[in-house]
Length: 234
Image (cartoon, rainbow, N blue to C red; front, side):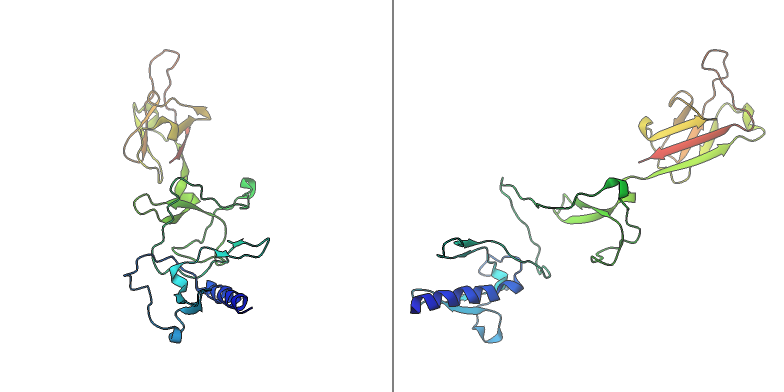
């Protein structure tokens, strides 16, 4: 009877220590390992079934409780929370680490956050941000959707004098310099122009129209009133 009582006491003491669970400290020389008596409440003193006095502390990590009761031999469900006091890494070592039962976002109603701030807490913002991994440190950080995919649109209407230009540079608002054909599209009065033939892009935020003043099938010139639309993304 005494043995059962002591075992139940150990389980109760361990459960009381869960609320302060933090990142596990395995270095016995660490300043985070407390070796004093439990008088200050930092550690919990227990007695095992051999009568040996032992000490448990919450920041030393508790992974499981083993019970001899049928149907509950191992307890592995924990309510985690609080603030990490140290950098914490989980090395999966070839095993699967996953989160089940996550909500699936409806992309038709996906709203990008417009008020997310650095280190903001939940419940104080709107919309969604994306989680990304810093490969240098492994840290999980967040990214605004608008920073992941940016795009823009500029219109230019040809004025008097520009119709005779052999090359006309259009300044495109906020467009990064790029020579990637897939990231810039230019239209003249609704008809798409060909990159590298009818226009060029460079390392600055400009699109240069290059009319073909010849008489061939690809020939064209700029007329006053022509509307040029530039679409870009990055």
